[in-house]
Amino acid sequence: VQLVESGGGSVQAGGSLRLSCDVSRFTYSTNCMAWFRQAPGKEREGVATIDSDGRTTYADSVKGRFTISKDNGKKTLDLQMNSLKPEDTAMYYCAAPRHHIRCSSDVESIWYNEWGQGTQVTVS
Image 1 (cartoon, one colour):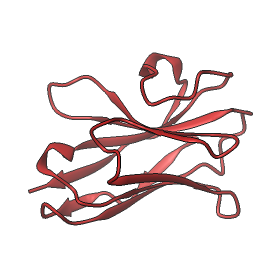
Image 2 (cartoon, rainbow, N blue to C red):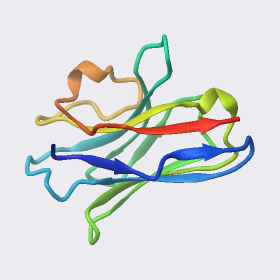
Image 3 (cartoon, rainbow, N blue to C red):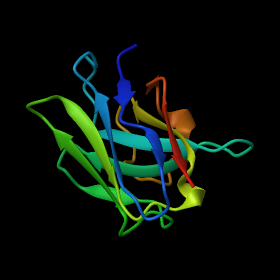
C-alpha cells in the first residue's frame, strides 16, 4: 500500500476535520493527486484534485468548504474540511494515477491506479 489516509472521525454538522494521506511510499511520477469519497449505495466521486503546479479543482458540493493541499516536506496530501454537512458522510480515499491525466475532480475514478485504504468521515 503506497497511500495511507488518516484523520477521519465523527463530527457534528458545522464542524471541521482534516484528512491526511501519507504519500512517502508512492514512487511514481504523477501530475495529479486527488481525494475521492464514497457513501453507502453511491458511486465513488471526486472531491478535489491538485496538480504538480499546485492548481486545484473541487466538486461543486464542496467548493468554499474544503481545501486540498500538498506538503512536500512531510510528503502528505491533505484535505481540510470545514462547515461539514451530514451529506459529507462517506469513506474518503486519496488516489493517484501512474500516468498523466487531466487533473480535475470530474475525472472518473477508473483513471486512478493507486488508492489508499480509506478513512471514514461521519457527520451528524
